[in-house]
Length: 469
Image 1 (tube, rainbow, N blue to C red):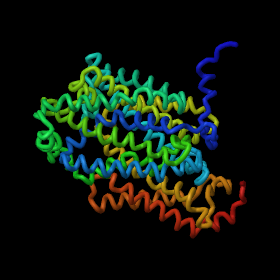
Image 2: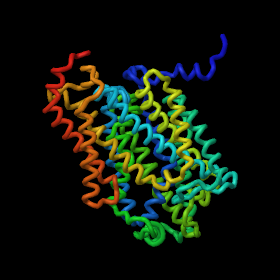
Image 3: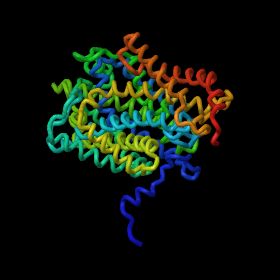
């Protein structure tokens, strides 16, 4: 029998984009530990940890704020995202199509595709900074907006191509990639932070807190950047993944879970990744600043502490975040173009993300970008959760678009637009300097609007539509 070419092999990968995952395809707890560890002990950690240092967070703020925020994030995955995913066994994109119709979900998915592509692009950029160090090519720093030179762009293109190929292979290969590399990455973060502490003046444990306040998290933002407080730390650590947990995008991942409690796997990513790694990378950033490098790249931050191992860690960390992000974007794209193969669409997303990665501003503005993403996704997650769990108890029709054959659910559209409008008005009216503060109000406003509008208008809408199911 002739060997199948790669296109035929990819065509045989079934990701159940438009149907529930069969019970015989669900995964064990370990699969999710590896996935979330690989994704959240990642390239972003070499950007976000230093951002807290640059924005003048105090030592107390960082340790206490990260504790509270990461507990809230873990609970969001465990009690909101995973139960919805296990009950439906579908992706958020297909479930949303059943609720609001093909035309409206197309709008949402196009927005998601752009946001996913930009997130993956930032991670490709992070990995590229480490490769640039290996070949002695200057790469953009944390605050740069434009590419450094043509060779740096070529490095980005090469890294992005590899990441896109892995993502096209489907959930199993993305998960396997994460399981291989995730276990040792935390050790690199810890080793690097411990190694540079003496350079900051920490010669014993009882000196750590004094040095932490004086030289690392000083409470004073660098010139040109806003001042962050404990509330910024709490809200960022809880809601930087809003789209994934309360926005329900990680239904794409947890639909493979045997039971909802597998959402607790997120704690590995939150406390080993976001807690420990953000603190460790903050220490590394402070060391670079003390050495006179006022605009270090993620690769330089890691290299100055643990050398070649740090460079490899940055490269892999970017990959393990970009891979599942491009995979999710491919699923969203497949809903927009259901007759096209998922792997082809995923490859297109990989190309888009790679091209976007050539612009370093995605890394320098990562905190602001993630805040906008959180606000866009929160009301939609509320709509899906309410539709799946609460509508049957309220006597309302779940999966309205699927049942009536409608391609556009105006109730969902009005809910989404008004939620975003109200939250942006609150953001402007209160003078908030952090879009993440609006994500939680956006979720609750979306939930309330969806229930009220459905109570008022859905019975009449259903009565005028012939049921198709």
